[in-house]
Amino acid sequence: NISNDINMERAPWTDEESSQLVVGLSELGRDFAGIHNQYVKSRSVQQIQNRVGKRSSLPERHKENIDAALAKYNADNNISNDINMERAPWTDEESSQLVVGLSELGRDFAGIHNQYVKSRSVQQIQNRVGKRSSLPERHKENIDAALAKYNADN
Image (cartoon, rainbow, N blue to C red; front, top):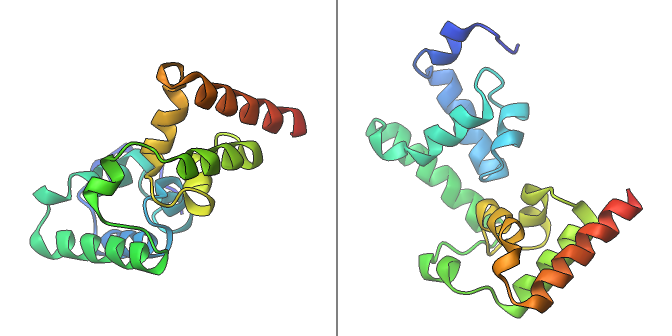
């Protein structure tokens, strides 16, 4: 049941919601829209994202459960937890996979992450596409062409 009750949405997270969030994270990683749709319909996508992003302020057991769920998802999907890797410049392989993902999925950044560029977060993919004007010309042209192909095909 999806609640439109504003008081419910602002209420503290229940143990059931916290448990469902952990299950969703272990199954879908940081696909917050997917977690909302499949596991925690009583919370908005933004609330789910905030809960995960601000977990350091949560009780220890909730923080540990969220960290463990994300670690499980990353391990199951061969995603690196290496912070330096995630902050490193984009490789040619990542850029190529991004272009393939864009041409197949358009702006479905979570889908592109899950299927094509697992080494980058959804946010990094979104930022790369959104800030393409600052990229080298060949990367910008490839992204624009991929989006145009997707739009023409759909």
